[in-house]
Image (cartoon, rainbow over all chains, first blue to last red; front, top):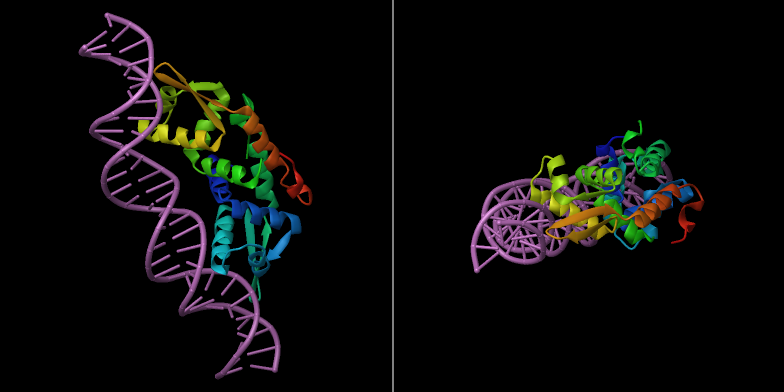
Length: 98
Length: 98
DNA sequence: TTGCTTTATCGTTAATAGGCGATAAACGAT
DNA sequence: ATCGTTTATCGCCTATTAACGATAAAGCAA
């Protein structure tokens, strides 16, 4: 993961609602858009937009299932993100691979 | 660390230049603004603005030393940030304290 | 086909971000 | 008191974001 991709993920997580959506997806593993809409005090279009940004950052995947869309976390990307953040420490910070 | 604070830090890191500045600060531990300006292809005002955002997020501290300002990482906040991200995993995700 | 449900997109508005040059402010030195 | 250095802020412009309602699009059911 390079700086650009990391910054995109961070940007996607730079909004409390999107963090909560991500945490929700992690917790229940997979979720249809409408169920997420029900959990938050925003309109369907707003949540759809948040999901779009999360998807564009790569941290979330969306799969169309009939008329619905099922969202889930991309665990490979999440792991890379976590690894990058974990490695933010003195000296070793700038040498992590992938 | 709550969702709002986390989202602010993520937002601050939602730009590649600010991630690089943070990594630079981590690597050399402490740095005067001018030295950072020299390392990046942007104007002094732009870098100063980036530093301001990093400072407002809490991840970076700025200390005035005479005519200069010395920036360094707030390791307590950085550690909390890293802990929060590390705990983003199935089931346990939403239960971490401070 | 006609409808129903679900989700994505469009259009709008207000606010925020990113970049710059110019200027102000703070301080040390002369 | 003035100058030089360093950093912060202002003003400007453009681009992006956040929110909404309205509408389109996709698929299932009858």
